[in-house]
Amino acid sequence: MNEGVPMKVAKKKDVVEGVPFCAVFEEKSIALFNVGGTYYAIDSTCTHMGGPLCQGTFRGDVVRCPWHGSRFDVKSGKVVGGPAEKPVKQYKVQVDGEDIEVTE
Image (cartoon, rainbow, N blue to C red; front, side):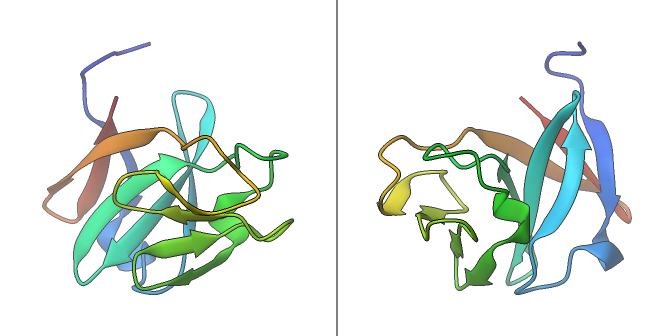
């Protein structure tokens, strides 16, 4: 585990605005989002029953879990609509040229 060291997880061209992107960071599934050219990353596992957020619907800055409809703010990981009650982990994102990098 390289805590604090940026790790490349995607290319900018792969993370299209309005479409969640599934990536792997430190052996965990994460979801990447492009909101107006700014990139965000959160755990892809919904805190309600483990649904894959990177396969959910994404509008504005909110992703909706495909399993039971919990909604999360992709900028903070906070729950904005249940049934989930706990937020998902948010990761720091930086862009290096065409690469998207994530750190804890």
